[in-house]
Image 1 (spheres, helix red, strand yellow):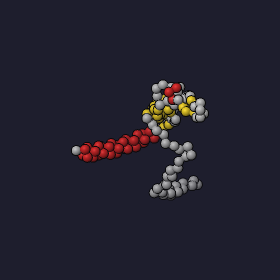
Image 2 (cartoon, rainbow, N blue to C red; image 1 turned 60 degrees about the vertical axis):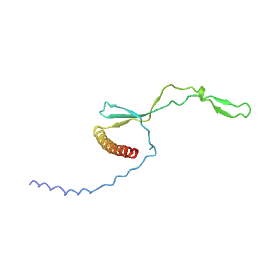
Image 3 (tube, helix red, strand yellow; image 1 turned 120 degrees about the vertical axis):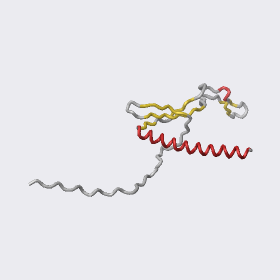
Length: 130
């Protein structure tokens, strides 16, 4: 005689909240960003590569030797290095589509708040100048 299927076990109640712990890795650091290259990867990820524009660091600066004291001083007028600016890249972020959309929403919300603060600050400054 066939056996009756047993009713599924009562589902355990989901917790009301779960703690999320924010921990910085040993490699954590703050990066300045003045721009970014953004594109897509063959795997369908958003590739976000921030950079910072900066002046080139000299590759060579002659040290002048004082004949009397032996003291060394740098002569930056004779420095050698690159012309122009340097775009310094430190990292590329590969972001899945859903995460990129969530980041975009968070940025839009933060920028809207910052616009309001900037507008209020500008209005207060104008009032003080009158």
